[in-house]
Each structure stands twice: as C-alpha cells, then as structure tokens.
Figure (cartoon, rainbow, N blue to C red):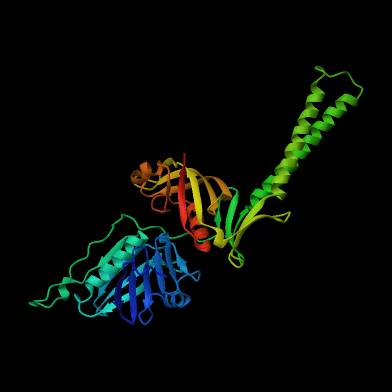
Length: 391
C-alpha cells in the first residue's frame, strides 16, 4: 500500500485503464479500481516489470510474471496514423527466432487528434524509461499529416531520455555451459551441476593415477624382493613407493571430488534454493526464496583479449563467482573460474569497471554467459541482481 503523502500522478488511458506514477513505481491499473484495491495489470520498479497472468497471456509474455531491465530493448511511444492514437509499449524478446529478436508489447494508448494526448503519453513514457533505466524511442507524427493551412500546431517531437548506440542483447536461453559447469532448466526449476564431460575426465584421471600407483608399487616391491643385485642408489625403490603413495592419494582425492560434487537447485515449485550432493544425496544447505535478499555476481577486473575485427567488440576474460545474500551472510552457489565474454562499449566502460562497488548488469557493458545465468536466477527468485568487481 502506498503512503498517502507520497505524490502520485495519474494518467487516464483508453479502454478504462490508468497509469499511476510514483517516485519509485509505475503502475498500469484498471481504471475502475483504486490504487489500494486489486492488483495492478503491470507494476514497474527499478528491479524490473511484473505483470498479471491475464496480461501475460494477452501479450504473449513469459509466464514467470516478470521481466528484468536487460530483457527490455527500449521503451517506445509514438503516434500511429492508421489508428489515430498515441501508443506506449516496450520492445521485448521475440518468442521465436526470426528476422528481429525483438517484438512490440503494448501497454497503453490514447486515441484522438495528434496533439490531444502527446503530453500524457510523453510523461508516462519518460517516467517508465527513467525507472527502468532503458532508452526511450519516440515515433513522432509525420509532418505531412497536418492539413495544409491548418492553424493547429503540429505535435512537438519528444526528445529521447537516452540514446545509446546499441540495443541491449536479448537474454540467452538455457542451457548455458561453462568449462566445468552447466546451468540448465528442468521441471523442478534451474540447476547448476558439473558437466558430464568433466565427470568422465575426472574419473579417467582417477583411474590413471591408480594404475600408475600400482605400477610404481610393483616396481618398488619387485626391486626390494627380487634377490637380484642391489639397486644403486639403494633409496631408489623407496622413492618409487613414495611416488606410488602420492599417486594413490591423488586418485582418491579426484574420485572423491566426483562423487561428492554438489549441484545447486533453484526449485520454483518448493520456492527454495538448495545445495545437494549429486551422487551421494543429502542436502548441504537450503534457503527459501523469501530469505534471499539479492543475487550477487562478483568477478575480477576484466582483462582485454583483443577485438573481433577492427571495430568489433572487445573480447574479455574474468574470474566469476555467484552468491546468494540473505542479509546476514553470502551463500556460495558456484565458482565458475575464467569466463570469456565481450564488451560492446569497452572504451567507455573500462574505467568504470575498475572501480569497486556494486552496479546493475548491462549486457552492453559486459556480455558473458555468467551474466545471463545470473539474470535467469534473479528472475526465478524475484530478487534484485547486483554485479560486483573484486580487487
């Protein structure tokens, strides 16, 4: 419920809808309902856009009921001559691959003459773009549509809030694969688990260590008990046995890493995150969704690896970790190690990336599979996502 002292601007729209704009919220509601009664069709905060199931079905939006700011290419407001209306909407990822990865998602409209509702549409669009920190694109009425000799002024062209050179890339679909880990979607929700090829390679390495240990044991014991001439130096067989012992320990350690490996499950049915042993069973820790304050993606300062072409994006490499914060401690989810990615605006963000502190994830600044995975987690949990640079 909103504080009655908080200033709220209300903008009526077509089809009995209304937009309510507060300092930290933007809401699309049924105009017959007050702000305190009933749920909003669409509610926007700095963390993203949430919407009702009916609105999701009508606009073919993800059924999770939430869009994070990186999921939105831009806010668009413009005049449509064919319907004689101003329209406000978002560019969101297209559900199917096609010529464009983005599609239109309408929010509100204002029928009438060109100049009748330009101010209301602009106010609603600018508030929405500022809150989401997304670019605003304005489609102004064509000047040719004004009648020749008409005294009524043409609706003014609305200046964009921000005009970036590139649109944010769409959120990558699961699964996402890393050197040792995979992030997959299942019927239970989202799962971090070791890759199958990592498991097979680790088991093969364990067997190899064991075979080598047996060879050294055979050679060492055979030399000591053969009754042949004494080996010179005399300590050589004992060195072989010591090597065999180290190899045996390495074999056991590698095998234990496999069978004791942990997978982290974001269980959307039970609404909890839990870390369990994949092969041995048993839960190491669990955390309810309501206990998660935010998802934290931390990384080292990205190291440039060269550009793709003369004017292409900068390839970067960084160490990445994911944690969950509950207000008192951080719960480790996964340590991904070196992760490759690209930066579309490397020259502009290089100095900012070296500064300590938390910030929002923007794929135009740094685009790696780890950042996409973190956005998926934050959306599933319904919590903010913060990005931190480790020194």
